[in-house]
Length: 126
Image 1 (tube, one colour):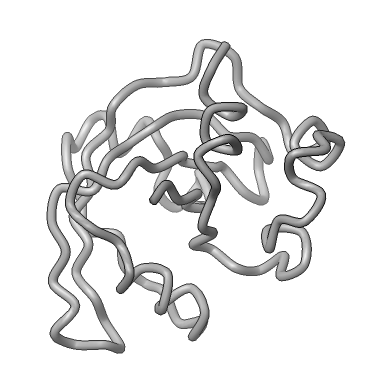
Image 2: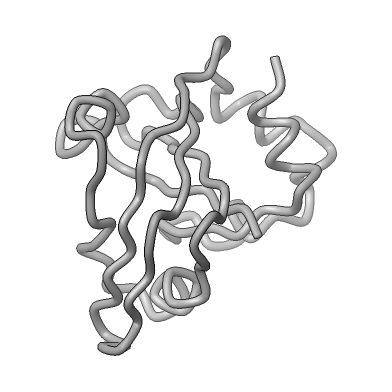
């Protein structure tokens, strides 16, 4: 299943992920986001979305490993895959019919959002 991961680029950006090569996605406190994080599997596709500054989907990543033995602090390791050729700004995502029922727009502060395959393709295909 693909997911969208929101991050504040002033705290940890897609560029930081590219530089680091791999990171543990953590710092999640919202229960729904934690459920989504714990549900991830090795190989799941990810879209990295810059929130607050930029407000756009900027790149793709993949899940390398998941250790959900501590349900309050799952250890999800991710690696960057590629920068999007064309960033997808929030306004375009919001306007796209494919996102009309997305939890992304019902729970704005949700930092780990499940996507359908069609939504992932819309965000990543240029």
